[in-house]
Image (cartoon, rainbow, N blue to C red; front, side, top):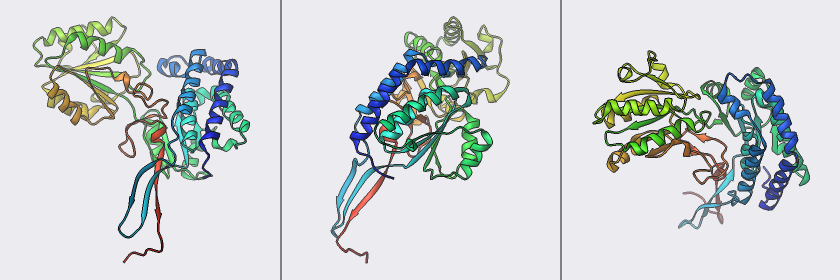
Length: 399
């Protein structure tokens, strides 16, 4: 793949900033067509679909952030000279062609493309049909920006495919594919893993947990839980499950205080048989599958655990490996929890809503990876490269 210099890449991104602003009304009008055709029964997906003027401003901000970041391609990771005279340099290099499959969110059409392009990758965008008109308008802006700077539209491609066509493309792509990122629910991820013939980097589900320790400070607990649960229910970093330690000196009072604080904000509480007798809700959890479920709704599940180890085991069994919280005033317990919980982000006395590229200093993100290879957490510009060894010799042979 041809390596573009930083100046031409940044020129394309500046053109994109201008084109997004210039075509703001057309983008919002295209989005309205998508919104009008969408079934609002799924509020979380509807929220993700909306593009208004403020969202266009966010898109512009994301492009500008990436434009202002250092180009990762060619960055020296390590350098060494061996006794035999070989000079070995390990440098960051593009993946090549990345495909992202995503649902609903038109802003992914901006963030995924800007990151992939700045990291010198081609990107294939397979958005959901519910955002078709929005995505087409945004890709027009990308293609105009590429044309403005003498580059081929093939750097950023929009794929209009139904499920069977997508399945066949994954099995037999008509061009080289180096990495696929499925950004959506379990069914989408399973579909891609089943059919893809190249590396798949999973942007996993949320299903995030909070553990309330016996010494938790309720002045921290309530605001953190409310923010994590209600700030944005459609976010993969939203809270779904709450575990209260049964050794808490005010166990029942704590359960009821948490329930009241959340129900006052409109959250539906479901509870296990272990705690439902202490709560106002009569919605009992009878199916274990609920603990594996990502709600994407104003809904939270509550139960109790017996100690820190029980909490760790419970979370590691059921969570999506995304973001989990411990609320405690004991530093040693917090450290043990954070070391032993198997997730992309672990929190002590803070909301899971901070698992976000912008909030974590990464800037625009392609996704939140719950995989362990090659990166876990927000996938920003620095994470959209692989590496290559450059070995300079003078006739050396291995003996």
